[in-house]
Image (cartoon, rainbow, N blue to C red; front, side, top):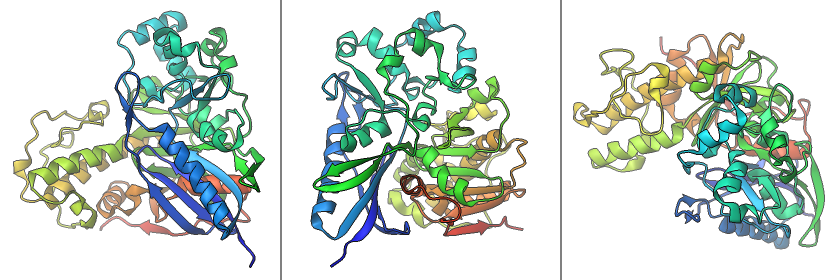
Length: 458
């Protein structure tokens, strides 16, 4: 019996770790989600269990190959950025896998900028707002000055997506989408590593840069398989749209992070944009993409947990809440907020912080939830405007977890009537991007499916 030729994609998010299998025409034929308990690093701070994740990925591929049902032709990885894996001379992990939410030491920035210079200018040059460990390149400086015993062991530092590819290929490489995602490593004016990387001797610690569509043919469990070098998940989510959409568009890729990306905004980044978490990514083609970010998924989870506890109901109840055309905003002024946001920074958009949150003003879980969505979409619109600006974009696509959140999408449509808003019902945009990249497909071979337009209420 002939085996079906397939592509395996690992889509490794901060919250969910997913495996997809695509057929020759890139139709999804299987997916599986895995979650792992976090483990402590050397300071007791929780983060992803890199060993458990690595073993799951390798054993999954082995199972699929040895099962005999499929002929695995390609493997690629889409994974979150802002993280690095440090290897010793023998290619073994040499340090803990640090969570990007781990705080840097209090005096870190003073020490760093005494060597580098003005912080605002540095942010502009590297397209990297100062975000702590989210600027993953800082790990090189951090290890050298705060973990010298670990630093002595490190031979090569890999970006997280490339480490996951390395598990299969044994190839230590870097690529542009991982380098360019607010790592504080890359000078966007000169399109090379920033002077602090070169002058500090860190460049030799970083693996050689290869094209994002680079693949290696590897013998895996007795089969010849082409394995990609991996890609930053937000940049990967953009690929299906860049390939198939002809008119200028903005993409809102949602999940733990809500990331707005506009490949058609070429305006220089400003200091004000940086303060509001606007930055540049690099596309798979090596071009800058203006992006803005909100920690939306984590904020929604945090707030819904509080609401469900207050009303003593199931946390997942919000998943069934529909649009209410009769919704009335309880805020007295447009810049007022009724919720105390733990993961967002609404003051950066001119909103009044609410430190005296009072859920008793709501009659039900549903009423509180719809108020929350109204406020979150206000903040989302402000973030979106940073990337859309005056770029001439009239069309926006929303994919990921929030694309199926009906109240969220409808409020966006109401608040942005000048935009044609579409949702993509596929929750695997970043996985599809990695699959397209591995298979080197272009616009004549791929059409974006499952998109639905949403109109504002009249």
